[in-house]
Amino acid sequence: MSEMNTIREQAAEWLIYLDAGGPGDLNRDPGFREWLEQDPRHPRVFQQMQQLWSGASPVPSPSRLGRAFGTVGLCLLLAVCGVQLPWQTWRADYRSDVGEVVSYQLADGSRLTLNTNSAVNVDFEQGRLHIELIRGEVLADVESDPERPFVVATSNVSAEALGTLYSVQHHDDHSRVTVYESRVRVTRPGTNESLQLSAGQWARVGVDIQSGTGTLPATPDWSRHQLIFNGASLKSVVERLGHYHPGVLMLSDALASGSRRFTGALPTDDSEAALALLAASLKIDIGGLPPYVVYLDEAP
Image 1: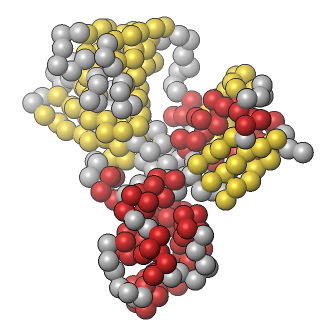
Image 2: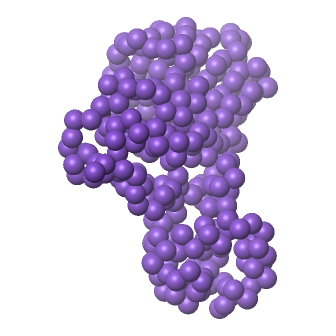
Image 3: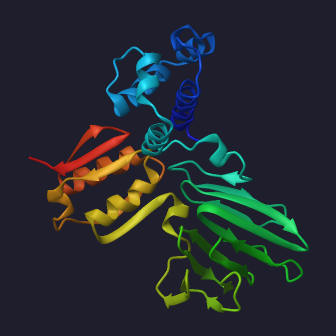
């Protein structure tokens, strides 16, 4: 997890503590005071999160926060700030933070690369290696072993490697499997419906299985810590970049309905630099309350 997102998560935990009925005066809590003094960024991040939601004064006021933060409102704030709550992340065997792309080598020599904000559980069960993709996207570089099947599964799909490099992306209503090398057998859980994919093929698995073929690079761009666009609409660029940004990216009506297109590469591990590159290339102004809320508008 990046250092700034660790700070945001710690600030969120203090807000949760307050919302759950912590001390009447948070400023007098020695743990909170100690946390504020540990790093000059701590009070700034805490203050920004306050102001984002309720426009609170710079001095943390537990009585005002207590009134402003209902449980639902707090969860919405944390979602806007890109904070992953502990109970959503700590249970997974492997995970990545927003804006992180991380790789893990498994005991059999296979390698999992997690895209931004992803989580998996790994289980060696009954002679097979079972990867449960809880959320996000994973690229599996499989160490082939005919005696030990390798499966990546979501609620929508079971994708068994036949000695291969492939990715699985999980959405609420479907999953997408893309094969970069060799073959993968795709199956809809609870049905006999299955399909074998070869390199260059993909499948979208939801209420049914849809498949297609395309020209693919050797590996997905995000696994190389960059997002590559070729004449992409600004709206689609911002939508994709938003998955790597710890906040909300918003387009003005003029930009959203405009015809600007972008060709180039943007880094996945530095969304502020990516936004700066995009803005310079397309003559866009960046405003709002970065990084939590970024508003993109036409430059004057």
